[in-house]
Image 1 (cartoon, rainbow, N blue to C red):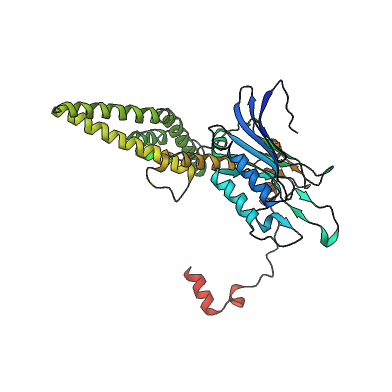
Image 2: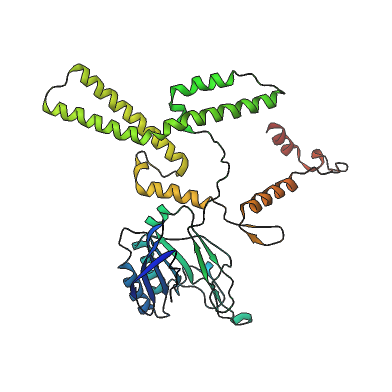
Length: 367
């Protein structure tokens, strides 16, 4: 059964069977998505039919979301109790379905396992059978996605809740040094100008203030430059192509040839700056020069941004909360307690010469 609010969205069923419902979800102001709800069979052959039916709807150009009870676990870590997990044909079919259709599991919060046989003692079995998968297109257009495992009450399964439209709370971001700044000649002059400004206070305060001012000045100075990097790249490509087409029709003058060389050099510098900008955000050691324009690279950077987002935190009382103010207060309280002043008794400590050999003492002094 699939339910939705007609005042917020419309859902059109495209295919339905005993194991799945697939349809197109149109949300006002949010575009269209393909959504599938599944209830996998215990029989491997029936599940294989389910994967085949789902694949017919995965090949489009729309974001695809599929979730619910897949009735298949993917590792021993997703199971507790009962028979040991084995890599059987059912697992291979499910894994191949995920790989072929470029699906990714969304991170979750709540109980680790989503199903329980509700037995006692050694006969009790817990497994993660319910999950939510999205394709690369959905991953690229959704800023933050989170699956919540709701408490298991009236069923042997945990209901799963997918949040994708939750508005992000914008906080004051930290300004960090960008490696690409060093490629601009104007950056050195700006640093010298800002560094010469007078500051008041002790040496440590003055140094910190100068660093803060310089970093802030570089950030706002470069902000305008980065806005037009992609536009500049496209413009230079068009201008280079135009001159090269002109050359194919006849001989270029010395002046036009110099302009062509200048444009090519400027394009290479622009591409290097864009490459450096993306490398800093992806932090992937496997990235080769020039790979920054592939969709996979951009999706990797977007996925990294999503994985760095703290969606919830466990407070000192053992409760999981999602409010941003609570998350900030919990971190502040933890480090305030960790670094608070403590009285230490230093008398009676063993002298190093009494517990270390002469050879070890020599190593210590040498370090």
